[in-house]
Length: 250
Length: 234
Ligand SMILES: Nc1ncnc2c1ncn2[C@@H]1O[C@H](COP(=O)(O)OP(=O)(O)OP(=O)(O)O)[C@@H](O)[C@H]1O
Ligand SMILES: [Mg+2]
Image (cartoon, rainbow over all chains, first blue to last red):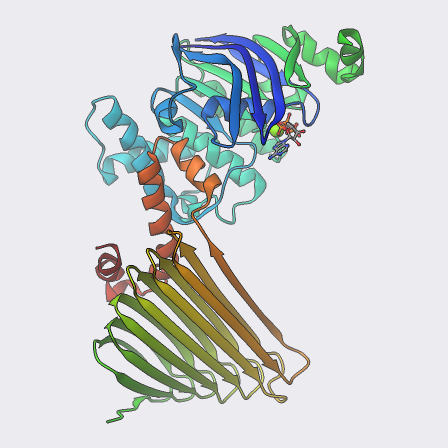
């Protein structure tokens, strides 16, 4: 699994948001992106996932060498991309467990594997629920509907565990989680982490990075990555803020 | 001929009514009685329903419309005692030139009554939905809690939904609300589903089902809601 973002420019309603993002993420790696509000972090995540509101004006995103920018969002997902949303969407009326099972089976089918029946799937989901310490009542509710902020984030991680993507993009999964939930979710992500998958986390808080240790930390500002380093960069940012970096790049 | 359904005190009844010709149905739910009634309406029909609710009565009424032509539903509910709970809901899928008109008229006579109206329509082609909901709260009917929702999902350029909520409130300590929405499938919801591996068509289908299931979920399991869901999906 390898994701290469090359000179990516994207706009929304003709307003440029991303202005030349370069980033390569390989299997077994954990990357973190930090950066001021409005710098384009969520935009990057949605452009990678294929949100129709954004127009890519320049550059490429390669997944295992294939440019995915021409692919529909679902094809990207089936090929192993997963986005845990900063603001997960509520879908009233759509039963959480059915939704998860259908999504899981869609992926199996895509890969030419036999689908699971509801009973078999129940076994799988119970195991994943335990990892995020979620009550099985959540499965009987509509997708994210009426979930608290933290519950939505946990549900995203549950979906990630079920769909087992090769590349997981976690957009501020830690925001809104209480202290215990943060630890639980971080443990779940660490369990998920393997030499065969890659993780990109967007976060504002160094705290998350104590739980899930990143191999690389990047700073995004004004639609670009302006600095990359190891986990010590996050500590530096925690201490000094972004001002010094923004100044040094001009 | 009018055959009033009589729900005796403290008794519980459930009933399904098929409506394929014009019908008038009246029901009187006596104190503490509970009535669940499901109307399944089709064709070129007018269905008049009138419910009289006594103290502590519970009414759950659901109107499902399928394969109609030009159909009308007149719904009148009289809250004649305290502590009444009424839950009115409806779902219709309208296609072609179909037109469904729903008039609800709730009259809260006594204090402490509770009403929810939850009517949803899926509108395709040149179909038209008209929903007119009148809630009347008498001056004695303090602490009335009466809410009305009419949600329309329009899947074509030419489909239309008309919503006319109307509140006539003569008591001062009440909670009454109405909300009408007319919209298309939500792009963010569709994207969310696609990002989980569903095609655009599958996502649309899931969202339409979800829109309907908020009503089908209200149908008691003993009435086999799946059976009626098929009527609309077919
Ligand atoms: N529909 C839109 N029209 C105009 N500008 C938009 C639109 N959507 C997003 N933007 C702008 O794009 C910029 C980047 O937004 P984005 O959500 O990517 O930021 P972010 O880095 O994720 O911020 P945060 O840390 O607050 O989550 C912001 O300035 C935002 O206002
Ligand atoms: Mg963001």
